[in-house]
Amino acid sequence: QDFAQNRIWWINSAGSSSGMAELRKLSWRARMKRRFLFHLEYSIVMMMKCFDVGLRAMGPIFVCFAITLISGVIWTWFTYILHKISDEGTWLRYFHLAIAFTLIFNVLYNYIATVLTPPGFPTDEYEDPPVDIEARTAEAVQFHIDGFGRWCKKCRKAKPPRTHHCSICRRCVLKMDHHCPWVAQCVGFRNYRTFFLFMFWLWVGCIYVLMTMAPSFLLHFRVRRHNQEQSAVVFSCILAFSVSLAVGFLLSWHFYLILTGQTTIEWYNNRMRSAEAKKAGMVYHNPWDLGNNTLVPHAPTDLHVQVTTK
Image 1: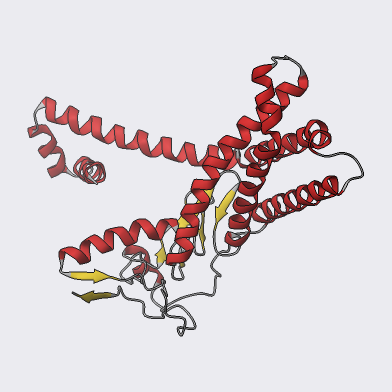
Image 2 (image 1 turned 180 degrees about the horizontal axis):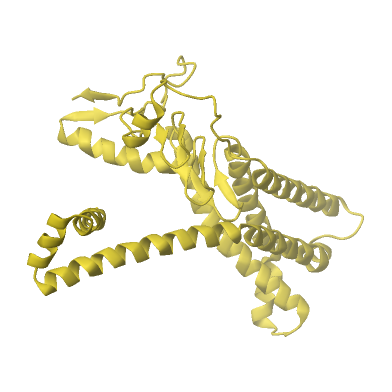
């Protein structure tokens, strides 16, 4: 905020005669400080824009890399592990094959569906409530229950509730949770279900890989053989263990968000509003969290922050 105010002051001062006179009255050190802050802010903004462009361009690379890693673990399991944990033609072999194909189908299907399904974007016809475009662009005065202005200055469109602008996708996203580089787009209203199911089946698949590969992985420390099989098994186990920890934490986090009726962005905003309500002697209630009330058929339509006094 200080950077923005300094930038506005510098531009306004440099564009008027009175402003130039004020600049001359400043000491050399003060002018250098303001100039440094101005260029520092500009550099930070440009770096953030470059980061957004780079992350957007590298999205397909992340997707191909993820599919390659998943395919490598699948190939290792079928090539080196399956014949060790079950004999051919036995019921145990069919049992492991059924589990393996179930996991492979659900992981790949939900991942590809998340990548190919748009998260959802506001329509051009949406406007709530109708208002002058120029006035809305100048100052967003209408706020909905998530605490954000409902007019996007970048898209120049009205935004439905729970909609946010993504600087990487350069569009407003319905019920935006976050931008995920591993799916090369945002996770939002239309692809959140498949994203959650992908994390669930991926975590289950990692646990299954660790359980079936554990004997071969431990054998590597007793009998050190530097061959392709041992290298593939060790790499797959380390990868499955790392992914299980990361995805397990993320899965637990999104399970909590689902239970409380929030997105990741709304969680940050709700924390701030809870703190503000607490200072005022009130308790903030997330309007989208229906709690234990099973009689409520849908989310509330009230567009104002809901707080109650203690």
